[in-house]
Amino acid sequence: MQSLFVEGNSVLHRLPARVKLIGLAGLGVVLFTTANIPVLCVAVLATAALYLSIGLPIRAALARLKPIFLTIVVVAVFSLAFNPWHGAVVALLRLTALMLFAASVTATTTITQFIDEITLLAQPLERIGLLRADDVGLAVGLVVRFVPDILGRYQAIREAHAARGLKVRPTTVLVPLIILTLKDADNIAAAIDARGVRRHVS
Image (cartoon, rainbow, N blue to C red; front, side):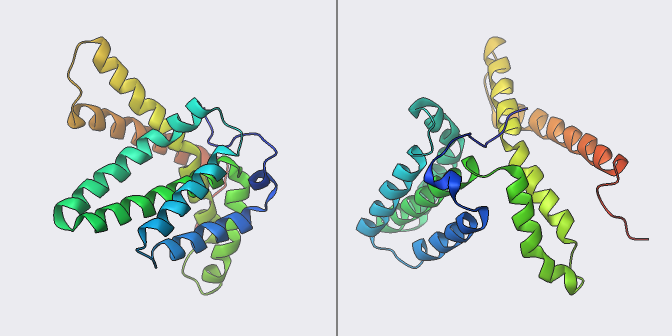
């Protein structure tokens, strides 16, 4: 099984997870309160430099971003279809800067740190009976943990199509990917319940 965490000793590695998550939220607010293209370009360059500072080789760093960046490009194209070019460029720059910072946070924060911080943030909502903080933390941790596995399985399915000379279509790739992912989800849920990790309401 893969992990998005990268061992290292960069500035981001040494920062507490809480500071990084607050920084990510703050950056999101700042980015979506400005439509100034030069400012957004500076934000993209700054977050790109931050991402490259975590210690990944250039090729590996770019490979991690490829699936997300393709999604951002699709969003920008749709934005261009319904809005002036300025709005599409702004959307592209905002999402790119946010993606780069989020990728930096994910690569320098362990799953345990994510779970601990999310659980702590959810505790006020648990006190008023809206949710269970431990369950929310576990859910977020599992999502982050299994993203690389899902992406890896997607690539494997594409390669299997190419090896058989089949044309890659969204339906022929996404359907088996969803089935395999749901199967894994069932297995993980069964393992969690067998170990008594989740609390049950009587």
